[in-house]
Length: 272
Length: 239
Image (cartoon, rainbow over all chains, first blue to last red):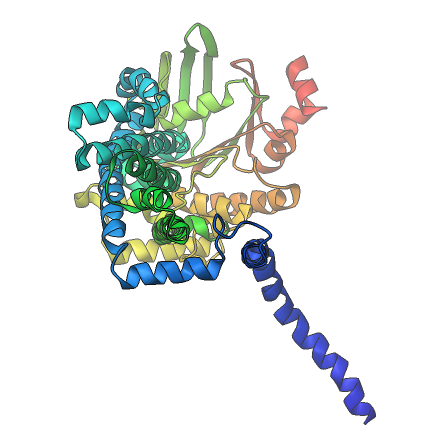
């Protein structure tokens, strides 16, 4: 009996510290989010806020499921992904090589920098009417405005990444007799990858932001259009459903990029 | 390799980093270039290695004019203060870098490279860290890896720029002995730059005290301590 009662606190002392930190880290990370959602649900069901403006979460969820089951939002998701995907891919395939070039070759950077700064400071949305005039109301102008806004974070991050590569690394490779092209591919590029990824993640966020704005202004399909349209038709649960989908897309894009970065930069992640 | 510096001067724009300096470094010596920042010691080291070229004067390696040799042709092993290890490469690949960077015709076979890297890892007494990345190493380990990388190309001389600058006092003492041992094993002519008089006096066979682009005194540590040649040397070494 005395042994048992002695054993018990010891066992608890052994088990608890192991379970505790994991629980606490989950609670500290997602606690506020869970609290916010719970508050929303309670406030909406008890009538603390107007449920026609803030429908309860279960109503939103069932509106989402119903819309998806009826095949209503799939086309919008697809077209939204297509627009932002094409624009993002185009921005990456122009921004990364151009940034590498500008970061490496001083005269090119000097010549291009003023005009790029000028373009960058001009809001992409302010230029959207210009793009519509030039490219029409179709897909091209929407893709182009997203491309425009996503290009600059990628470009600037790449230039910065290349320029910040430790000169001593380049000197060391040079001293070992490495050719310029080898120094670039084996030393400069790998060292710049983390900075490039910062640009990619910024751009992915910008792409979704511009996507929604462009779809709200001048589209008849896409998730941004559905948010607007649902509001016009007073289908508030559907409106929130589309908003949640957009938030989810943003999170998914970010998670994908982080995973890609982890794979490419195993070396930098180790102690970070 | 015997090194001779013959009336070398270096201008950066209008400022003179080195007034004409002359110095003979006997083959197999361990030499310290000692001086405060701005004394021209690093510039002199970089001119020796071919990272910088003199405005006037000559550098002779074993009596042959080496002034216009490129950095690759001089075959110097470099260690920088920041170590300049490639963060995205393992320790093994870092040490092998100088061999892998060679043109295909001069590159040793893979097995030979592996054999050499393994030997160097043993020399720096870290035989098991080949698969790690630099971010997983301590400062002292990084310095030793940088040293092994410099040795991998079988250099004709070893040039170290403040090799212990980024380390705490205790590790620094250990690594001083490590460098001394490696120097004695390989017999390489070794030149290191430092602003720390204890380090220079303890480690080097020959100390070159520099100030404002000029050589103030050259001699054995004991001689410099016993007979400082100029007021600057007396003050700088705190004798």
